[in-house]
Amino acid sequence: MDIEFRDSLDAKSPRVVARIVEQDKLPADLPMAISEGAAATRFFGKPGQVFDGFAEEDGKLVRLALAGAGKKSAEGRHAALERAGAALAAKYLTSGETAIAIDAETSGLDAEETAAVLMGARLRAWRWDHYRTKLRDEQKRTLTKVVVIGAPKGTAAEWEDAQAVARGVEFTRELVAEPANVIYPESFVARCQERFKGTGAKLVVLDDAAMEKLGMGALLGVGLGSERPSRLLAIEWMGGKKNEAPTAFVGKGVTFDTGGISIKPAPGMEDMKWDMGGAGAVAGAMLALALRKAKANVIGVCGLVENMPDGKAMRPGDIVTSMSGQTVEVLNTDAEGRLVLCDALTWVQQEYKPARIVDLATLTGAMLIALGHEHAGLFSNNDKISDELLHAGKQAGDKLWRFPLAPEYDKLLDSPIADMKNIGGRYAGSITAAQFLGRFIENDTPWAHLDIAGMVWATKPGATWDKGATGYGVRLLDRFIRNTTEA
Image: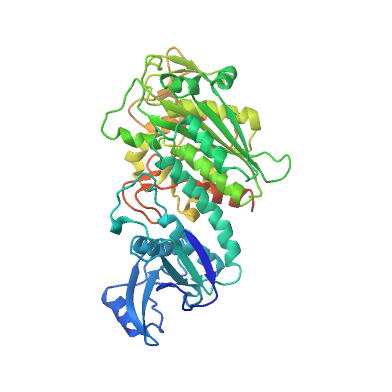
């Protein structure tokens, strides 16, 4: 979506002019048809509410829209402004209107608030129509531009920064939305290599041979049944102080998950193209940081495999040796994400000595049972990093809920013939998965595991996304870096 800034309304301005309004405080200067129409339809200016109507001004028929942003003093004001922009985009996306204007001056928005409205509009307008060839006219996207009228000083700079994050979110959505015959380990890497050109980020790629030499038996074991070779991708952004230990983000990138020999039921298996949502979030967050030239040292690592059943595939009961040297008895080949992550976690610690680690993974169905699609689960060995992530999640709108880690859960992972099993049984499935990963964190490095199984894909539109890929995690990680490293 194109964003254009103009000083005032003129003959070339879009037909639809929108104002952002505070809850229960309709502007006094509205035409009577608009003010009375809004009241008659119970428009109160709540976040995400939209009303529009036609009025005569200077002998000309104009179309005015009102978008609610809630109460100005309320916590979560930034998210409410994003919802206002998103609601406008959703209303006019396929309306036949090609552009709308947002009157920032009469809306009383400052530069940061204006950028928040634009962020919401851009994110909600994103759709992946690449493979749709027979859309009816009323389904086709028409809205391509937002014109900002009377933007306050500094808005362009605020938007330049926000737009970098929006591009990161959109990249994540693109990766997650693509089918598994298009995005697989090698093509995921190729897509990143293309997108990061000219950003200043450095990409490091390990192939099967390199990972085998390093002893990554857990990650490689997951990919044994696939015709697609596995990959480990590291994206380096070193924009901070020289020699300062980086922050590491690690993402699970299972580009398609059949469950392997422990095969999943057929209904719903098509959804497993987004089992690489953690890696997608890491790639998108790294793109956002690189595009906005973040003053931080950050390493993004994506463990990329395809989990397929085959004569060469890993079997239930097999034992694999991880890069850390610890052995794992694989009781269920559908608990594969933790096997990918454990080697990626070991590698990033040995290669980069990070100051803190955050991993993201669509790891367990148990997380969906616990939290549905409203929060991702947070597990951590460190209260400080946990609190920082919870705070960043509230700011960004990528909500988190903390779960416990405790030695009592470890006994559920005990194996009679190896160092551990890859599953802990029926109970506390998300917790035992996190406990498993915790065994690969060295030297008490501050670490957090985010189980985002319920958040990367939506079956209905949300605040700033349409049905499909949400882009969850990008803004969370970006905000986390702003608060902890760049502050």
